[in-house]
Image (cartoon, rainbow, N blue to C red; front, side, top):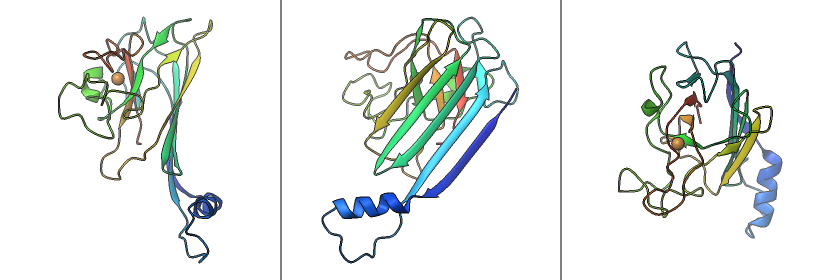
Length: 195
Ligand SMILES: [Cu+2]
């Protein structure tokens, strides 16, 4: 089992210059370098254990399946990529960023979906809030070998004091219609990600 977790702050000075140049207010040259957070987690799903990746349903997410999540903030947005292998072939799994870390016990412990603009109603099934611009959706369809990749880009960055904490894999694709938006069935697996 391999686990690698890194979180670092990269100074993207070149990007800051581009942003400044496009902002229409440059010219003084006094802009501070942008500080852009990057996160990467690579892990193997296991039942129990020390995490960060847990399976709760080894038929849908076998022990030994792998997951990688990368997330990077840049230019006011956040791009997150999910890569999986060892899952069921030719199947769509719902996947989202959730508010709490995973536990060995159950996917429910990861809490609700992270929402940049929180829905005052819970559970949130209103498409005005439960949508892939206000949440991070990473639904992934596997190939014949059980591998897949998905990317989300949202037009916001996490407030420092209110970040997502995990990515949950669900049993089916994410619904989008009113009354069910954001739902994707059971939670066979979860990986803790320090967004
Ligand atoms: Cu979810």
